[in-house]
Length: 145
Image (tube, rainbow, N blue to C red):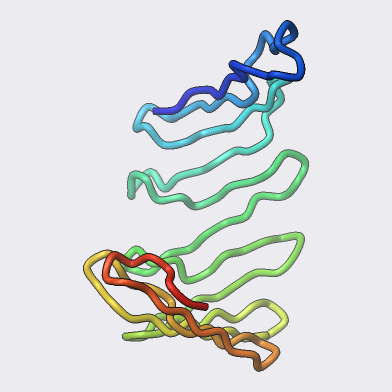
């Protein structure tokens, strides 16, 4: 796993490379990302996981901000993203679409196609009524938008 990112070469300042990493990562015993530290060794991100479902992120926060929380359905899909200081979101899943509604009751609909790990958003209906279409090749790479 990635534990740090170091600046190894700077052509503008070749003699003054930093003595500390640009960013550092810590992990739980289970290998889940726990925290991110900047070059001054200040924690800038923190992550919380569900003890009953290893690897399931239930919260994260940026330094100085409230924690964003996530709730899941029995299928392991996020059904709610809760932000105590801003917009929160609800997610409703259907066969080939996901409806996202924010706490101001604005709605976006994501239409999907594909399967076997290559499910992609092919149409996005935004809250303002605009629509974006996307196309993908057989490998799932974006080819048109």
